[in-house]
Image (cartoon, rainbow, N blue to C red; front, side, top):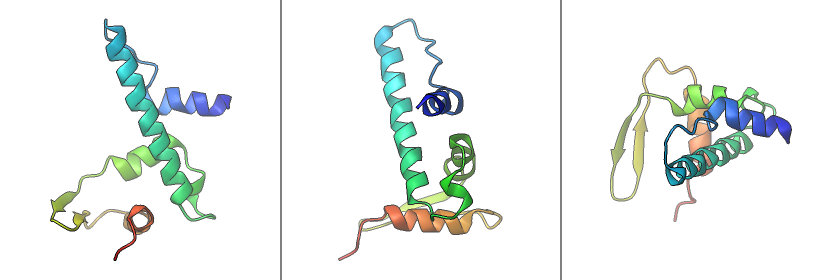
Length: 104
């Protein structure tokens, strides 16, 4: 449990409460906690014997979430076009498929 708290502080910078308002700092902490839960869901959706299952939260954030891509939104689907030089294209597609709702 201590390691999870340490990862929450270090990798998501949730210990920075620089606003003078307590409400703003509390809201910032809620957003960081939501990001922490999202990253744990990404780790859980990764294949069992892959590097991504045990990767640190910072690695997941840098390689999967901080990604330059084109996003096209249509009425029934969202299309994400990754750069041609994206080294993690396969795992991104697999994780996106794991989070996508089942079709009709």
